Length: 159
Image 1: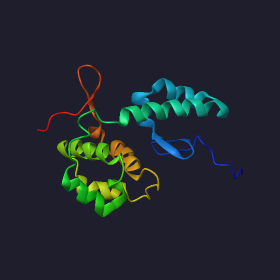
Image 2: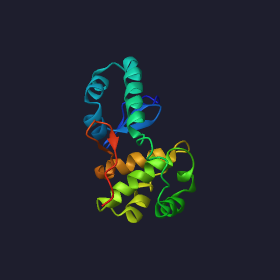
Image 3: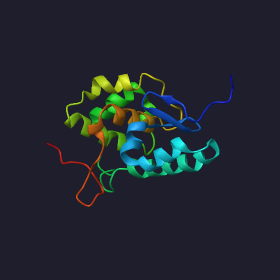
Image 4: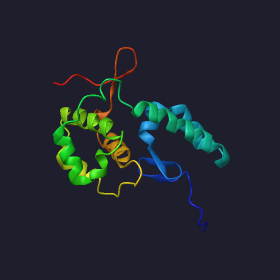
């Protein structure tokens, strides 16, 4: 058995693409189906470029629309996040996570109960809010931004 870690490891819905970065297979099927198919069929040496493109697309899509990031995060989410891991509030990844928490709650998702469960597996030292955001999107598809009429990312108005 080889001691070299594999970059094509599957962990439930999560696929380890490069250097331990995991992406939801369900998300890739919805948003980058051609790249997912190419990655699955590629030889190991070609996978790096395909994985980099998948991650580039994911980073672009993960960002909230301009203007929405300037709205203050819900203090209730800040309190929940602080109890889980204060690092979640640091850096630019907090606002997109907070916006997704608002969408999830509007859809009936029990954020105060479910978010700690999603964070039960250790969060990485780098970008813990981004990792928790991915876990939330996997657990609650309603937390995803809804495309507007022009195909851009838009958050539905509060109910």
